[in-house]
Length: 175
Image 1 (spheres, helix red, strand yellow):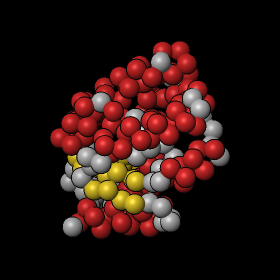
Image 2 (tube, rainbow, N blue to C red):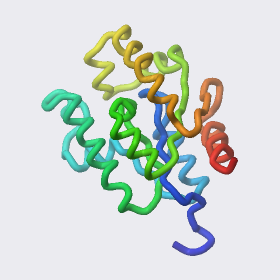
Image 3 (tube, rainbow, N blue to C red):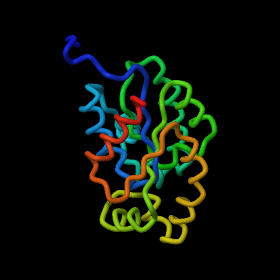
Image 4 (tube, rainbow, N blue to C red):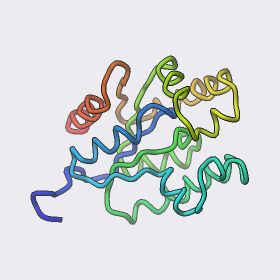
């Protein structure tokens, strides 16, 4: 990479948060701002498995998908640093939270339930939303809050554009 394109990060950045928080959208903007690669862990899983996340959930269950996440995290220490968008449930496993902390900085995109529900209602290909009712999905969100809160940096995203969120993260990383 030419010197003028040198990455501004020295360790991985993991964006965490519930589905619909904007991890992929913000991740791409943040990576561009920091002159770093962007990687969506969900997309890595889809490529490796040769099937959609919905198919993985339907055929082998959520546990299989979570195993894929853990396997990828274990390999990342051998990869160049990047900005990673994670799946919303990656934080449920202690091993995943520890792996992310050991090889990078964890950023939680904190978004309130009303905002998330509105975004999720308008999206497709969300196996957990498709298979559970809104009450169960909200329970997931509530139950994951303590895990998300373990992040190195918490960014309140409500009322902000994805670009504003990326700018807040970049400032937080420099602090």
